[in-house]
Image (cartoon, rainbow over all chains, first blue to last red; front, side):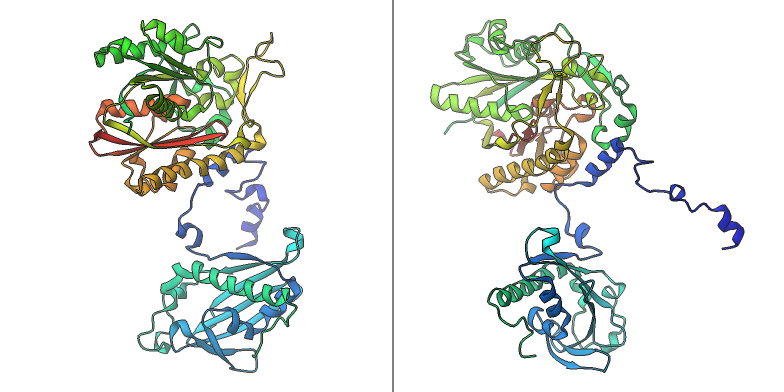
Length: 216
Length: 331
């Protein structure tokens, strides 16, 4: 953009269209807009069509939850089907089997930040060059948000376009259904896995056992 | 086994048609989606009484059905803004039709879903007192009385109510029978709607008109209650009948605003054409809404033998909710 054009185009927030701010949308109008967006029920697609957010309270301190989730080998415990992990390179890449896809290889690495208590799992089926299935997790101290001990785990997943089209079909085992075909079942599947995470951490914390993962 | 038959319904809509521009707070009224969806509504005349309009309806029922008025055993009324505050409208109606009803109730609770509550009351009296025919009267009078005064009509929400009266002729024939009546009170919500006379009592001299109000902080709670209570009652009635909500041929609910109507049919998986209402032309008819929509569609021939019609709704700020199923035609 030329300098002149930049000068002409106002960058004040008031100049940006379609904002809902008290200055341009009076409370009287806002109430109706909000009510209109408030339904009695929501379709599965409207909630989980493009993103799959799930969350859970876990009665285990947030630092313990972080340490557990940031250890890649914990996924062999709390996921439904990720097993048989082996180191794939020296930069944290791991390869295992995703047994929901029979002999499918799953490559992944953990990208975590202890201070922010975020643990992201960057994964892909069949190859480890492009890790595009990314599970974003944030662990929050429940004392802050629920006024009780423990943690709240937010787990987000975004519908990357590769879920619709396998970018590396030549690397797939013959006859193996594509992971993206099951996007509509991610909410249910992930909810049960999050239940696993909760049950493992609450069991070990309540019984004062090492938090794990065990036998890695 | 008692048959609770909705034999016929007559309605009376006051002649005074009020368009939206009668009301104040234009910005709020035209911009807030909670106040949209009406074109017009009727207002009761200052000198009209609920019993006048019930009488018109009852007289038509007597003529249509060739009734001997002495056979009417029971009269039940609900008047949203009562005018016979001491004696009640039922006794007046009984006099006007030269009737001889033994059992008369003027019920003041269950507001927008009082039609179902009154049907249940008639059913009880059929079982216990051998009642064979009854008049169930709903008169919504609050629009012209409460929301048309020089001060109250300035409120945007004044555009939402509309007046109308219905009288249903109920018998014990095996025809259009009402079943699976579900009634539930929610005491926590009983005080969330109130009459606001600017600090004065309604029986005291004052300089401002009264209004029906709920606190602004309660409005989202009431939305949430309405969103959940009405589908809950519909699902309860369907479970009792061992049907799915999608087997309902037509749903008729109270009609507070188009957002509630949308939410209820979404929650029961019914398309708009199977959810009947008269909101656009009559606005929120309170307790008269369900029987007036039912009556209009009976006259139009909407319902076919074997149809299942679900009536449902909630009262006030959610202190009561009800649903029932009608098996249309002979059974």
